[in-house]
Image 1 (tube, rainbow, N blue to C red):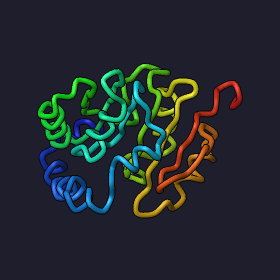
Image 2 (spheres, rainbow, N blue to C red):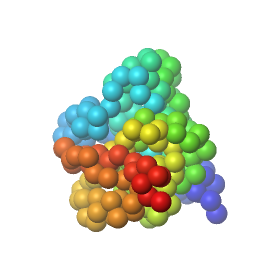
Image 3 (tube, rainbow, N blue to C red):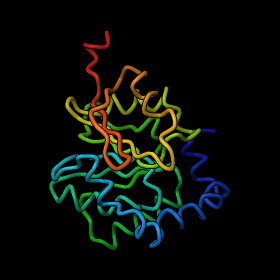
Image 4 (tube, rainbow, N blue to C red):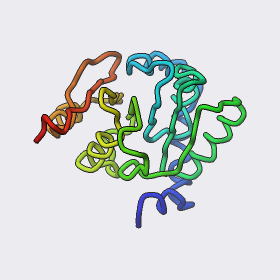
Length: 190
């Protein structure tokens, strides 16, 4: 069964519901300012941003505000209930720069070299997102000179070194538990 079909499963959505409530709670916002975390990624007005595993939208509305009307935010999650919830929030906020998609991050369906910034916030490590498949897809969609930001919670574990070992990305900095990477050009890797 593919991830998108699994994401439409009533059982999977039911199991994810408590996590979605806690992910988007006022208590979490009080302890962790999403805008502060986003700013550590280097997000800028006018960028095209891919938010992988957006869930119910803890970071999404703030990211949309930071990129402004000239920017484009693609919020992606495999779970249909999260997508439905976030689409409603986006509509209520009157945001025109956000597209919410139910998709598998391992096969985004996005054009190559189409994204300025990839946000992997709180989704790694995750069993359905093996780095050996996820990183090549993120590398493919990033524009030359683009960047990928990874926010790791509660622990960084082995993820940062695994990303570097992939040969696809180099670490450019770290701030507020956000690790920033630039894609290594394909000419250098060959």
